[in-house]
Image 1 (cartoon, helix red, strand yellow):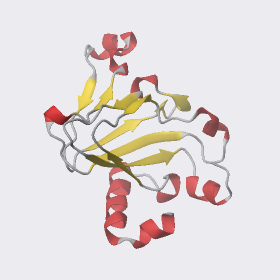
Image 2 (cartoon, rainbow, N blue to C red; image 1 turned 90 degrees about the horizontal axis):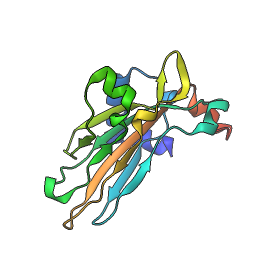
Image 3 (cartoon, rainbow, N blue to C red; image 1 turned 60 degrees about the vertical axis):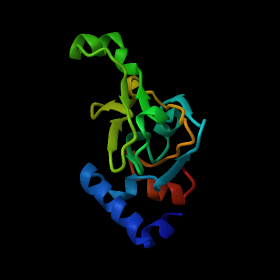
Length: 162
């Protein structure tokens, strides 16, 4: 739980650095989630925005912070792939129509929006659908993620309104 995480010095230090980097309040974040992928494991293409949360006191997830905790050799997979960057509107604007594939490297962090922008803070950004590609060759992938909400997630969670 959140209290346990806050009492662990290393986790608290990591969370404090994430908060410093994002500039967002602790009250808007879900607790840090640790992930472990073993050989053959993956996570299908999905989006971190939860539509039903837009009507709840916490609001939707607006940002995802994803931290790689170990390096996975290139031949062992485990990449995070964003394939929605080949969207035609994005291509016209930025002229880059390739998938974004990020290799797990210890200490590397990703930050992506789950909503469009401050003018449409409850509207899902369809460009950030992503997946965890399969880990191969008996490798393991360790990571952590934190989701930030538009409003006070901590208070809403205590009232079971998330």
